[in-house]
Image (cartoon, rainbow, N blue to C red):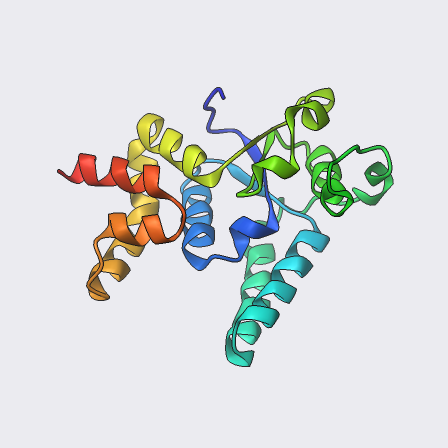
Length: 187
């Protein structure tokens, strides 16, 4: 993966639901690290996941967060992806909309925990790739450290308040390589 600050990346639902991963990615984007892309369907899946797994109060907060995404990232909504969905081949038909949204949103790739759902053979015809958020963020840490560190500091402070090392916090969030890079840099 060539690292480029002007990247446009689809955020799969699975990286929006864990609060830590979502906050890191969105903070990094706000700092100018990349442009996040999503579709209404991805955001609706996020809301439904929050509703199913969280309390009613947390679900209401997730709906509010969804509204804030539109305000903070007005150019991130991929539209008209539905017309492309039937052209997409995917091992999981439920994930075809993510590839279609990536195409409609002129994304460079897809950030997802579910790499197996987006094999190269399905993405290459569209010039897309997929990447695990841990790899994406660790690469950003290595190549765009200052910008990513500014995105990480608020969460590192929150982890410290809870008595957790930030590396442990990131490891629990399925971001162990980023945690290791952070710890080695903080030395």
